[in-house]
Image (tube, rainbow, N blue to C red; front, side, top):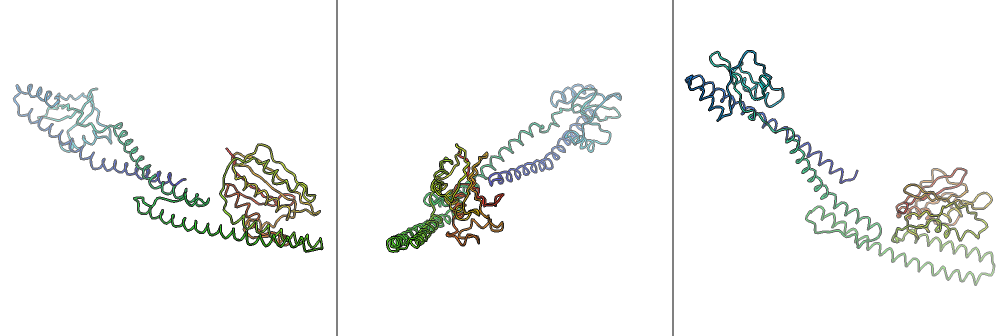
Length: 434
């Protein structure tokens, strides 16, 4: 789960619990007092109506009843023993008001929501042994309806989610910019990795300032490293070139001359591997035709009698890779197989196979040599590490390290295993070009 969704869900859950807690507090502190207030008003109405009917002249009672209907929307009716009434359901506002009314008017009071099939707020009371019904306006008991509560809850939840999105974006955007700047630094683009140091948030501005100082120091170190590598390449390869010229011209013995020239070539190759591993060339990812790249890599080995190639790379496969980096991967894998993967007859049999999956392309280079001890397989891609069998052959121990590093810079992986039937198999997986 990304940081954005984690923070969003946490904030949304917190706000939802807050809304529910607020609703419960409202029910406790608002609905109960409102029910008691309604009961008190209805009790006062019943007591005043009872007193008015009790002390009013019988002739004037008709006018009083008419006034109650017109002014207070209250009707008076005689309660018969055969009247059928239905009380309010439990856990409703009407039931709470009814209980409060009974407590105030006495145990003989009846509060119903329906009498003889007629809905309303019916209150039964007694005047001098005569039973009456008082029909009050049922709107006195009306509470906020379920749909209204649902609408307000949805509105509050929507506003809360919008606020959660805004807060999460404010937290997440600086981290995204920092991750993008770190990726640019990894690719060597130090100038494009500068972050804004004038942000109003003091902590984020401090992080950006520290990152910019770090990027500046890395840029200076990278410039020094490039200058040093250029000096090494010039200062070492120039004497090697002179030494090879002297060997070719000054050593009369042909076998000795060939051995010395081979040693000089090995030293030059090792220097080249050091420089390839140390340089940080910019990686340009683009669709690369795999079959043509493999054919260019194996071209130097086809005329050799001690190398036998078996290639199974379908046409049309195009990984998303850096062309120069992929060429370097194949060259190092082939050179490693030729040096360390010879069979008992001294011939290097190399299988090159490519298969396409849904999201990546697997390129496998396998030799038929003695293989490698399983305990040493994880360490073969470490810089300068060489197995016991490889210590007697020329090399720097950087070939597979360069392969792994180049594959990872192109968004791929490098896997090593001992193949069935003997030999080392190296599989490089690269993303498929869209």
